[in-house]
Length: 100
Image (cartoon, rainbow, N blue to C red; front, side, top):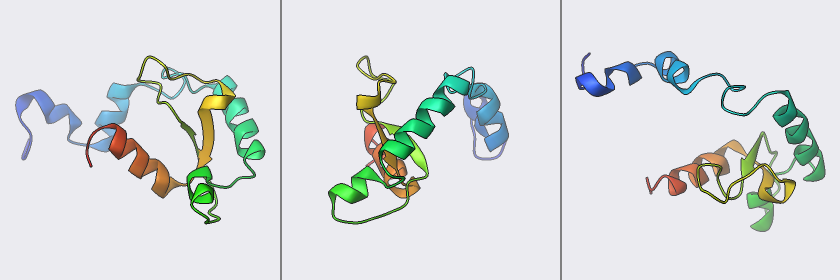
């Protein structure tokens, strides 16, 4: 338990954290999401839309909710989704969580 209090000891490993979150399907990322994700990637030309807006061409590997699903306004409507690279997605998520 080194480094963790009793309350957070279960987060000690990535595997434990993932089990706590549930499967992708349980979190709403099942087959319908994968189909939608493929459409968004194709629509955006497999390019990160954040980088593109800043004059850079970077391969997108993920699809991002522009307004995150945790907020009341976030949803899976295509107008709320964008192709995004891993770096931009990490930075955006950190900002949304108030870590930066």
